[in-house]
Image (cartoon, rainbow over all chains, first blue to last red; front, side, top):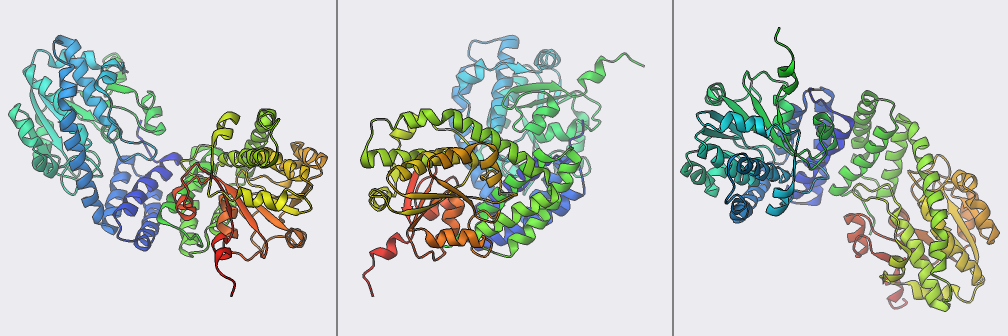
Length: 307
Length: 307
């Protein structure tokens, strides 16, 4: 399964970083100089043939080293995305009124996945908001949501919920709150500074007021201890590892967590919630771009007879 | 005016070539290896800060050196694009029935410009056919078409018409035939092998039957003598230079000719017919992407009082 660099990834990884550099530079000359310097270093990193989320992390770190203004550029982008998400929150939540049981849970899952469209790290994917009515109408693909529901519907579970993009986190709040309401203890994990592109960090959660929103619903917010694109186990903090160890199950949002965690042994159920936004991930998962995916890690392995 | 490499160009130039390499390679490993080797060389070429159409030419030559199958890939693409254009030709020509004078000429100009949408060399631009009715409805921007009409409507002019993309050449035939009908001698120029991306070459003109079509209307077809993206004067053949010398006026299709010729002294009127397909060219011309542009070279200079 492990996702390694594919030919289609080269242009995508370069283009996203080049756009950031162009947007964050003070002049065209600076953007050109830094852009070319970035491409030169990027080729060297790409030749090392490392796992894709580690490569993406290294490339982002290389870009912000050349052009530290990128961090401010994303801070502003994240701020306005969270603000817009908060203004849309009631529109999504009102759709859940009157629903109960699995039907209610399934809609919360779909609202959370709709937020995964707000990714600004894929060339050719324009981050966009889905209308609540469209979200309700969209069916789930590779649907492990019933299995997830069975695990959480009677409460008593400790759930580690890995967040992804900033605006998306507000829609994840809908699902996290629902998990709490069912009697589970939910811990959401955000990245540490300086963050990874538009992924939400602890700083974003605090300054936007989202921390209060989560805590009012009894949801704990923790940092991964790293700015890496996923929870790279050699980079995360001891505190985060303890949270991971204590969790009964993990919900992981977005492509990067899918790419990284699919190959790691976490010794507990992991449910990936995402929408594939590029052909490489779409092919790896076996679900079309833009579809709503709920898939359980090692699903196939569990179907094999015990040895 | 001279267009040099801009920050936005880096990702575009790399992505277009990387896509060709991926499509023309026999395996993913080969595509990855050649793609990375290409990016490495491309950065070195980009650092030389040469004029944009020369850089694009060098980058294309570098790509086909690494991956000669790209030439076959484009040969097939050009073949099917010319075939489709020929099947649509009557649909465009029938719109001209009953029209006379400038009105008829203007429509022929717009049909030729619509063909400029068939460019496969711009990242983020999907080559597409415009419906004849939509072409008729579209207005011209920076409209020098009346001045062009005044120069050719009484016949007797020798016109050098520089072609661009393969399928587009069939729609250029509509305008070339109209220029002949008005009593002018039209010479159309195509690129020499191995060509430049999907631009039409003498080989394409011969094998597709387009040569016969042009010649039946009294239109002469010549080669530029180079595979460069425009008529780089240090690369074109002596025969082509003679054609250029003998022409009373030049009609140049597409972005590359605009970018290169705008800075060269040709000592005769040049009319650029194109639709801008990227922000860099759109800003340089001052016309939106997708608009139909007819603009005369050095238009402003001619408005200055004589010294």
